[in-house]
Image (cartoon, rainbow, N blue to C red; front, side):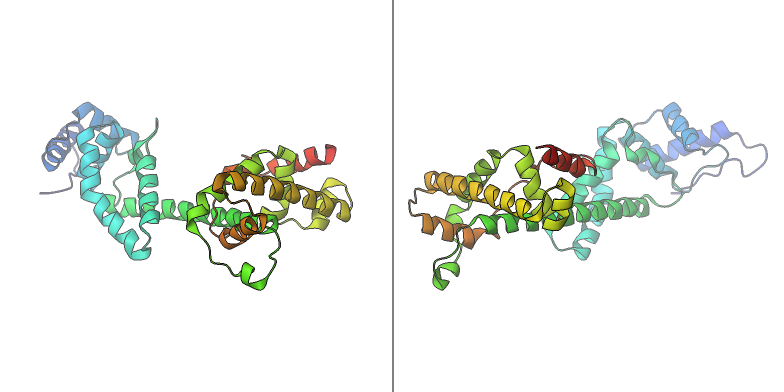
Length: 296
C-alpha cells in the first residue's frame, strides 16, 4: 500500500481531493479506527500541511485519532509500537521497574491532558523514530529523578546512622540485618521524625541531604559553628530517643542495645519517602526555610 499521497506537487491538483484520498488510505490501513475526514483535515492544517501530504500520513491519522481519545487507536498504538520500545529499553537497561516506569511516563505524556503530546507528531519521519525520541527524553527524566532520590536516600542513611546508639562491641556492630523488623524500624523512625518541627527537619535536611557544612549553616543562620553542632546533636538525640521508644512498641524488643544494633544493621535498607523532608517546590525553598530557622 502506498503510504504517501502527494498534494500540490502538480499544478492544478485539488487539495481537498488529495486529503480525501489520504483519509481513505489511512482508514484502510487502520481498520476499526474511525476518524471523520473533517477532523483529519483540521489536524493536517494545524500541523501546517497545507500544500502537500507527509510521507507517513497513515501514522498521522493514528496519532490524530489517539489525541481525540479513540480507544481503538490507543489500543493499536500500544500493540503496534510499544513492544519495540520496551525491547529497546530492556537492551539498554535490564531493570524491569525502570523500563515500566519510563513506558508509563511515555503513555501519560502522549495521551493524557488537554494537549496530549501525540498530537504534536508531524509525520516528517516514522512514528517509531519519533516515539524513540520521546522514550529517550522520558528515560533521561526518570534517571535524573532516580539520581535525586539516591542523593536524598544517601543523606537519609547518614541521618539513620547518626540516630543509632554507638555499638558496645565489635561483634555487635557487625550483626547481620534482620528483614523481619524492617517495617517496624521504618515506622518508628517516621513517627519520630513527624514529632519534629518543620524547622528542625529543615536543619537535618540542609546538613545531611543538601550537604551544607557546619560553617555554611553557621553563616546562613547567623549562629556560631558550635551552636549549629549543638543544635544538630540535640535534634538527633531527640529522634534517637523517640525512635527507640517507638521501635520498642513496634517490635516488642525491650533491650535498648538490641534495638540500637537493629537500627545499625538495617540502616542501609531502611527507606522513608523523601516527602518526610517536605521538599520545597522551588529551588529557593531551602533559603526560605533557612531564614525561618534564623528567625527561630
